[in-house]
Length: 156
Image (cartoon, rainbow, N blue to C red; front, top):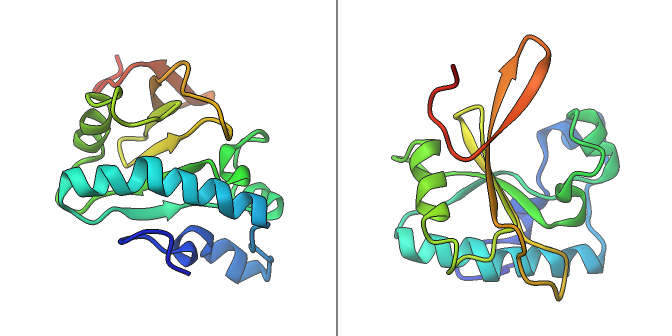
């Protein structure tokens, strides 16, 4: 099912983890509406402005898939309100900065540069405007994942 000019529902629901473990990762009608809003208000406009394809590395996750991948208990992926994305020819930092610098144009609620490998973007719940528009950087530490305010390339 095509969501926009450049995005399909299938790329948001495909999961290697689900396939490997035989987990049903089909979203409900309500979640499909959230995915459509994520795409039409954020991802397609970013794609249009970049002029480059965006690859969704993780989109919708059912509770079972989210548990299997070790996702956060309150992950917005489970509501169809978040996606992890990359763009060929851009570093994750370049993509994060591109989106963050246009925060007035793009309705993200949260943007995370994760492990300097991909960008996690979230939109707010239905019928809500973004309030915080926060940016973070996630790094692995001995204690586990640590989140730092802002987009930072080096953590000392």
